[in-house]
Image 1: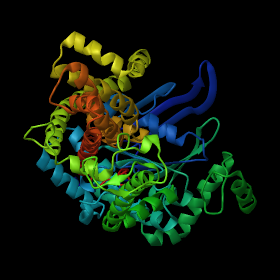
Image 2: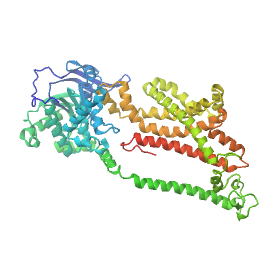
Image 3: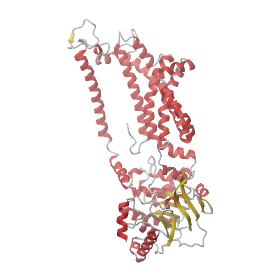
Length: 294
Length: 309
């Protein structure tokens, strides 16, 4: 694994790893437009950046991530990754994907799950084993090689998924609410974990979340989105010092940035609740949230 | 989401360490069930059978018990005593033969099993191939699945003579008949099983730019294993039924099918022998089922929640 040369600062001068230009996405049923999911999205991500997409439910943040990863095609607009089309980038294995659920194969051991992409890439057995073990050490699950996924906790499963995504050194890690299913304590620990991995590997990360504290704590930049149609309303630079630790969460600047993101979300019509999460699933929760914030 | 994770965690906690007690209980239940059947069987004969005599006795032997009623279905021809059925296994399979019934039935069952096993293997393979084609082509699935279903509504007894007519009275015909009954459950279950993967896992494989074959080999097929074994358990017993039925028109004299026909013809003189051959056929089916079960156990070891008996 190539060690990252320290935390990179967002320097727009360098050629972007990901360039999203004028992307629209509409979902149709027959000839009828059902949802305008994304409209006029522009976003450049530099090498080694950690960009979070945040917005209310249904703002298309996951759709945008899936378009970057060539899992869905945009209706119009262009996505360029490392100077290639998204499809070419996918064929070149430029992407590591981490979903909200770990999506581990339960018939495989932890080690064999991590080996999966390497098998697809045609690595030989010895290299596969060496790399899988290295990655499991990185996520601190070295002792759990022979376990099966169901024997691990949710947080551990997600760490296996991260190890699996990193094995083949993809140039971009696409993470779609990877910690959304975890409890708050585990989530904060995983945030620290993912930062450590990001700093060690120097990977570029595009991260979808609906948690404001998470977005601020992790990112170099936070892209705030609004819903219907999904748009990027504001991009906020996160100029918190690195390395970020638990103390970071107590800095004044941290709170200012959390507030800035929250206000940007509100300006875009996003709903908030007390824990700083956006777009609660239940409408009742939303009502309470609006009262609390207002 | 969180509760799903918790549930899986709970499964891990209860997973290992429970087989011993569970197995003992299962054996107990099985034994109790057999005992129950025997009690009912002999109870019926106790109430409404013909007078009880010592086992395998000649008609003149002393009467041990005289039932209060006389029910046609409970006489010694329609419902022989259990002990007479058991004792018949030790008798020569026909007058003057050197093999006893047990040995004779064992040989016949083994012969039938070989036919069934080949049919089973071929049927499973054909089922797998058909299902693989169907999950990759909606068009072919829509066009052909109705025929696959229709094939099974034709009674095998009607079809068996046709197959024998086409292929000749030989073992091949019997194997084809066994295959015919086997491919169907495998096809239907695997159409479902090969689609039973987590759709997000497919996206994951796409993100690795995995080929169709890799997706099939590493995702679809392993995800379908629980479905496959459920189908194979049905197929195992179906293949034996197919082989037994096929042996009649197929003119195979060494298998259970012919034994059943023969003992059926001589039922009046020895009803116990037909019952014995029925028991042999039943045991053969159970044995084949258990082989598949053991194979499943070996394959799915370490997977959660797939053992479903």
